[in-house]
Length: 313
Image (cartoon, rainbow, N blue to C red; front, side, top):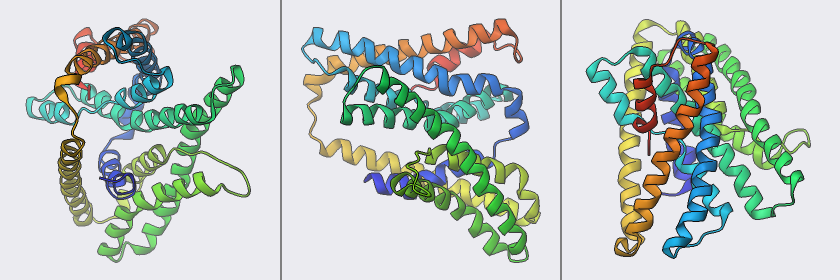
Protein backbone atom coordinates (compact mmCIF):
# COMPACT_ATOMS: atom_id res chain seq x y z
CA UNK A 1 0.00 0.00 0.00
CA UNK A 2 2.12 2.87 -1.30
CA UNK A 3 1.14 6.56 -1.08
CA UNK A 4 1.16 6.71 -4.90
CA UNK A 5 -1.30 3.81 -5.22
CA UNK A 6 -3.58 5.27 -2.56
CA UNK A 7 -3.54 8.91 -3.69
CA UNK A 8 -3.33 8.65 -7.47
CA UNK A 9 -5.37 5.50 -8.17
CA UNK A 10 -7.75 4.75 -5.28
CA UNK A 11 -8.59 8.08 -3.64
CA UNK A 12 -9.92 10.01 -6.69
CA UNK A 13 -12.51 7.28 -7.36
CA UNK A 14 -13.69 7.28 -3.73
CA UNK A 15 -13.99 11.09 -3.71
CA UNK A 16 -15.81 11.12 -7.05
CA UNK A 17 -18.31 8.44 -5.98
CA UNK A 18 -19.27 10.34 -2.81
CA UNK A 19 -19.41 13.84 -4.30
CA UNK A 20 -21.04 12.96 -7.63
CA UNK A 21 -24.21 11.71 -5.92
CA UNK A 22 -24.61 14.51 -3.35
CA UNK A 23 -27.35 17.11 -3.75
CA UNK A 24 -25.80 20.61 -3.73
CA UNK A 25 -29.11 22.38 -3.07
CA UNK A 26 -29.71 20.35 0.08
CA UNK A 27 -26.09 20.86 1.11
CA UNK A 28 -26.55 24.64 0.84
CA UNK A 29 -29.40 24.39 3.38
CA UNK A 30 -26.89 22.95 5.87
CA UNK A 31 -23.87 24.86 4.55
CA UNK A 32 -23.04 26.51 7.89
CA UNK A 33 -22.96 23.27 9.87
CA UNK A 34 -21.01 21.35 7.20
CA UNK A 35 -18.46 24.17 6.77
CA UNK A 36 -17.94 24.75 10.50
CA UNK A 37 -17.69 21.02 11.26
CA UNK A 38 -15.24 20.32 8.44
CA UNK A 39 -12.94 23.27 9.26
CA UNK A 40 -13.43 24.73 12.76
CA UNK A 41 -14.37 21.48 14.49
CA UNK A 42 -11.47 19.67 12.81
CA UNK A 43 -8.94 22.30 13.97
CA UNK A 44 -10.34 22.30 17.53
CA UNK A 45 -10.17 18.49 17.64
CA UNK A 46 -6.60 18.41 16.29
CA UNK A 47 -5.34 20.99 18.81
CA UNK A 48 -7.06 19.25 21.75
CA UNK A 49 -5.72 15.81 20.79
CA UNK A 50 -2.17 17.07 20.22
CA UNK A 51 -2.10 19.00 23.51
CA UNK A 52 -3.57 16.13 25.55
CA UNK A 53 -1.20 13.52 24.09
CA UNK A 54 1.81 15.80 24.50
CA UNK A 55 1.15 16.09 28.26
CA UNK A 56 -0.34 12.62 28.99
CA UNK A 57 1.92 10.23 27.05
CA UNK A 58 5.09 11.17 29.04
CA UNK A 59 3.24 10.09 32.21
CA UNK A 60 3.23 6.50 30.90
CA UNK A 61 6.79 6.60 29.59
CA UNK A 62 6.18 7.56 25.95
CA UNK A 63 7.16 11.22 25.45
CA UNK A 64 6.70 12.61 21.90
CA UNK A 65 7.36 16.07 20.42
CA UNK A 66 4.32 18.34 20.14
CA UNK A 67 4.72 18.63 16.36
CA UNK A 68 4.50 14.82 16.03
CA UNK A 69 1.38 14.77 18.22
CA UNK A 70 -0.12 17.49 15.98
CA UNK A 71 0.68 15.48 12.83
CA UNK A 72 -1.14 12.47 14.28
CA UNK A 73 -4.03 14.66 15.46
CA UNK A 74 -4.45 16.12 11.95
CA UNK A 75 -4.86 12.64 10.51
CA UNK A 76 -7.13 11.18 13.18
CA UNK A 77 -9.48 14.19 13.37
CA UNK A 78 -10.91 13.56 9.89
CA UNK A 79 -14.16 11.60 10.04
CA UNK A 80 -14.98 8.23 8.50
CA UNK A 81 -18.74 7.51 8.74
CA UNK A 82 -19.02 4.83 6.01
CA UNK A 83 -20.49 2.18 8.33
CA UNK A 84 -22.75 4.73 10.05
CA UNK A 85 -24.13 5.99 6.72
CA UNK A 86 -24.94 2.39 5.73
CA UNK A 87 -26.89 1.99 9.00
CA UNK A 88 -28.66 5.31 8.41
CA UNK A 89 -29.81 4.06 5.01
CA UNK A 90 -30.99 0.76 6.52
CA UNK A 91 -32.96 2.36 9.37
CA UNK A 92 -34.25 5.39 7.46
CA UNK A 93 -32.45 8.13 9.42
CA UNK A 94 -33.43 11.78 8.73
CA UNK A 95 -32.02 12.90 5.39
CA UNK A 96 -30.55 16.12 6.80
CA UNK A 97 -28.64 14.18 9.47
CA UNK A 98 -27.25 11.85 6.80
CA UNK A 99 -26.32 14.85 4.65
CA UNK A 100 -24.43 16.57 7.51
CA UNK A 101 -22.51 13.37 8.24
CA UNK A 102 -21.63 12.83 4.58
CA UNK A 103 -20.91 16.50 3.86
CA UNK A 104 -18.56 16.86 6.82
CA UNK A 105 -16.73 13.67 5.89
CA UNK A 106 -16.41 14.73 2.25
CA UNK A 107 -14.89 18.13 2.98
CA UNK A 108 -12.85 17.48 6.11
CA UNK A 109 -10.73 14.91 4.28
CA UNK A 110 -9.43 17.85 2.27
CA UNK A 111 -9.06 20.21 5.23
CA UNK A 112 -7.36 17.48 7.31
CA UNK A 113 -4.78 16.80 4.59
CA UNK A 114 -4.24 20.56 4.16
CA UNK A 115 -3.67 20.92 7.92
CA UNK A 116 -1.37 17.88 7.91
CA UNK A 117 0.77 19.34 5.10
CA UNK A 118 1.04 22.69 6.90
CA UNK A 119 2.16 20.97 10.12
CA UNK A 120 4.56 18.75 8.14
CA UNK A 121 6.12 21.84 6.53
CA UNK A 122 6.65 23.34 10.01
CA UNK A 123 8.16 20.05 11.22
CA UNK A 124 10.61 20.04 8.30
CA UNK A 125 11.52 23.75 8.27
CA UNK A 126 11.28 24.55 11.98
CA UNK A 127 9.11 26.98 13.96
CA UNK A 128 10.10 30.65 13.82
CA UNK A 129 7.45 32.39 15.88
CA UNK A 130 4.54 34.47 14.60
CA UNK A 131 5.89 34.46 11.03
CA UNK A 132 5.56 30.68 10.85
CA UNK A 133 1.98 30.82 12.20
CA UNK A 134 0.94 33.48 9.66
CA UNK A 135 2.63 31.56 6.84
CA UNK A 136 0.89 28.35 7.94
CA UNK A 137 -2.55 30.01 8.04
CA UNK A 138 -1.94 31.54 4.61
CA UNK A 139 -0.89 28.17 3.18
CA UNK A 140 -3.96 26.47 4.67
CA UNK A 141 -6.35 29.08 3.22
CA UNK A 142 -4.62 28.95 -0.17
CA UNK A 143 -4.97 25.15 -0.30
CA UNK A 144 -8.67 25.23 0.64
CA UNK A 145 -9.88 28.16 -1.48
CA UNK A 146 -7.44 27.51 -4.31
CA UNK A 147 -8.69 23.93 -4.44
CA UNK A 148 -12.30 25.13 -4.63
CA UNK A 149 -11.53 27.53 -7.50
CA UNK A 150 -9.47 24.98 -9.45
CA UNK A 151 -12.21 22.35 -9.00
CA UNK A 152 -14.84 24.72 -10.46
CA UNK A 153 -12.62 25.58 -13.46
CA UNK A 154 -11.93 21.90 -14.21
CA UNK A 155 -15.63 21.01 -13.83
CA UNK A 156 -16.54 23.67 -16.42
CA UNK A 157 -13.95 22.24 -18.84
CA UNK A 158 -15.19 18.66 -18.42
CA UNK A 159 -18.82 19.76 -18.62
CA UNK A 160 -18.06 21.45 -21.95
CA UNK A 161 -16.26 18.32 -23.17
CA UNK A 162 -19.30 16.17 -22.28
CA UNK A 163 -21.44 18.18 -24.71
CA UNK A 164 -19.19 17.05 -27.56
CA UNK A 165 -19.15 13.38 -26.50
CA UNK A 166 -22.79 12.82 -25.47
CA UNK A 167 -23.50 11.00 -28.76
CA UNK A 168 -21.09 8.28 -27.59
CA UNK A 169 -22.15 6.92 -24.18
CA UNK A 170 -18.95 4.99 -23.52
CA UNK A 171 -16.74 8.01 -24.17
CA UNK A 172 -18.92 10.22 -21.95
CA UNK A 173 -18.88 7.74 -19.08
CA UNK A 174 -15.11 7.21 -19.38
CA UNK A 175 -14.58 10.98 -19.44
CA UNK A 176 -16.52 11.39 -16.19
CA UNK A 177 -14.67 8.58 -14.42
CA UNK A 178 -11.19 9.82 -15.44
CA UNK A 179 -12.10 13.44 -14.58
CA UNK A 180 -11.38 12.70 -10.91
CA UNK A 181 -7.87 11.42 -11.66
CA UNK A 182 -7.13 14.28 -14.08
CA UNK A 183 -8.16 16.96 -11.55
CA UNK A 184 -6.27 15.27 -8.70
CA UNK A 185 -3.03 14.70 -10.65
CA UNK A 186 -3.06 18.18 -12.24
CA UNK A 187 -3.37 19.67 -8.74
CA UNK A 188 -0.38 17.66 -7.57
CA UNK A 189 1.67 18.76 -10.60
CA UNK A 190 0.84 22.41 -9.85
CA UNK A 191 1.89 21.87 -6.22
CA UNK A 192 5.24 20.43 -7.37
CA UNK A 193 6.09 22.67 -10.31
CA UNK A 194 3.97 25.79 -9.69
CA UNK A 195 2.20 27.77 -12.39
CA UNK A 196 3.47 30.80 -14.36
CA UNK A 197 6.50 30.87 -12.08
CA UNK A 198 4.38 31.09 -8.91
CA UNK A 199 4.73 28.48 -6.16
CA UNK A 200 1.10 27.56 -5.41
CA UNK A 201 -0.39 25.01 -3.00
CA UNK A 202 -3.80 23.58 -3.90
CA UNK A 203 -5.77 20.88 -2.10
CA UNK A 204 -6.13 18.00 -4.58
CA UNK A 205 -8.87 16.41 -2.49
CA UNK A 206 -10.97 19.59 -2.26
CA UNK A 207 -10.50 20.32 -5.99
CA UNK A 208 -11.61 16.79 -6.92
CA UNK A 209 -14.57 17.02 -4.53
CA UNK A 210 -15.78 20.34 -5.96
CA UNK A 211 -15.36 19.15 -9.56
CA UNK A 212 -17.34 15.97 -8.86
CA UNK A 213 -20.07 17.92 -7.03
CA UNK A 214 -20.42 20.32 -9.94
CA UNK A 215 -20.48 17.53 -12.56
CA UNK A 216 -22.94 15.46 -10.53
CA UNK A 217 -25.41 18.31 -10.01
CA UNK A 218 -25.13 20.48 -13.10
CA UNK A 219 -23.77 18.28 -15.87
CA UNK A 220 -25.42 14.87 -15.61
CA UNK A 221 -28.45 16.17 -17.55
CA UNK A 222 -26.14 16.06 -20.58
CA UNK A 223 -26.07 12.25 -20.29
CA UNK A 224 -28.94 10.03 -21.36
CA UNK A 225 -30.96 8.41 -18.50
CA UNK A 226 -29.42 5.04 -19.44
CA UNK A 227 -25.86 6.42 -19.19
CA UNK A 228 -26.63 8.18 -15.91
CA UNK A 229 -27.90 4.94 -14.35
CA UNK A 230 -24.92 3.01 -15.69
CA UNK A 231 -22.29 5.39 -14.32
CA UNK A 232 -23.98 5.54 -10.90
CA UNK A 233 -23.92 1.75 -10.57
CA UNK A 234 -20.47 1.22 -12.07
CA UNK A 235 -18.76 3.93 -9.98
CA UNK A 236 -20.58 2.70 -6.86
CA UNK A 237 -19.31 -0.84 -7.47
CA UNK A 238 -15.79 0.38 -8.24
CA UNK A 239 -15.72 2.43 -5.01
CA UNK A 240 -16.88 -0.62 -3.02
CA UNK A 241 -14.08 -2.78 -4.48
CA UNK A 242 -11.45 -0.07 -3.83
CA UNK A 243 -12.65 0.50 -0.24
CA UNK A 244 -12.38 -3.22 0.43
CA UNK A 245 -8.89 -3.39 -1.12
CA UNK A 246 -7.67 -0.43 0.94
CA UNK A 247 -8.73 -2.04 4.24
CA UNK A 248 -7.25 -5.42 3.26
CA UNK A 249 -3.94 -3.79 2.31
CA UNK A 250 -3.93 -1.73 5.53
CA UNK A 251 -4.38 -4.98 7.47
CA UNK A 252 -1.49 -6.64 5.63
CA UNK A 253 0.69 -3.55 6.15
CA UNK A 254 -0.10 -3.42 9.87
CA UNK A 255 0.57 -7.16 10.29
CA UNK A 256 3.99 -6.78 8.63
CA UNK A 257 5.16 -4.03 11.01
CA UNK A 258 5.64 -6.47 13.94
CA UNK A 259 4.27 -3.96 16.46
CA UNK A 260 4.16 -5.30 20.01
CA UNK A 261 0.60 -4.71 21.21
CA UNK A 262 1.56 -6.00 24.67
CA UNK A 263 3.81 -2.94 25.08
CA UNK A 264 1.50 -0.40 23.42
CA UNK A 265 -1.97 -1.35 24.70
CA UNK A 266 -1.93 1.42 27.35
CA UNK A 267 -0.92 4.27 24.96
CA UNK A 268 -3.50 2.94 22.46
CA UNK A 269 -6.27 2.92 25.09
CA UNK A 270 -5.29 6.39 26.32
CA UNK A 271 -5.24 7.74 22.76
CA UNK A 272 -8.69 6.31 21.99
CA UNK A 273 -10.13 8.05 25.07
CA UNK A 274 -8.41 11.35 24.15
CA UNK A 275 -9.60 11.22 20.53
CA UNK A 276 -13.20 10.39 21.50
CA UNK A 277 -13.28 13.16 24.12
CA UNK A 278 -11.74 15.75 21.79
CA UNK A 279 -14.22 14.86 19.04
CA UNK A 280 -17.16 15.37 21.42
CA UNK A 281 -15.84 18.75 22.62
CA UNK A 282 -15.21 19.89 19.05
CA UNK A 283 -18.81 19.03 18.06
CA UNK A 284 -20.65 20.58 21.03
CA UNK A 285 -18.49 23.73 21.03
CA UNK A 286 -19.33 24.37 17.35
CA UNK A 287 -22.96 23.22 17.09
CA UNK A 288 -24.30 24.88 20.25
CA UNK A 289 -23.30 28.44 19.19
CA UNK A 290 -24.60 27.66 15.68
CA UNK A 291 -27.99 26.72 17.14
CA UNK A 292 -28.11 29.90 19.23
CA UNK A 293 -27.31 32.10 16.23
CA UNK A 294 -30.09 30.35 14.23
CA UNK A 295 -28.16 30.54 10.96
CA UNK A 296 -29.90 27.35 9.81
CA UNK A 297 -32.36 24.72 11.06
CA UNK A 298 -31.79 23.56 14.65
CA UNK A 299 -29.53 20.52 15.19
CA UNK A 300 -31.00 18.44 18.05
CA UNK A 301 -28.82 17.25 20.92
CA UNK A 302 -29.38 13.63 19.89
CA UNK A 303 -27.86 14.45 16.48
CA UNK A 304 -24.89 16.09 18.22
CA UNK A 305 -24.30 12.88 20.21
CA UNK A 306 -24.36 10.88 16.97
CA UNK A 307 -21.97 13.33 15.28
CA UNK A 308 -19.61 13.08 18.25
CA UNK A 309 -19.17 9.32 18.21
CA UNK A 310 -20.57 8.11 14.88
CA UNK A 311 -17.72 9.45 12.76
CA UNK A 312 -14.68 8.41 14.81
CA UNK A 313 -12.00 6.54 12.88
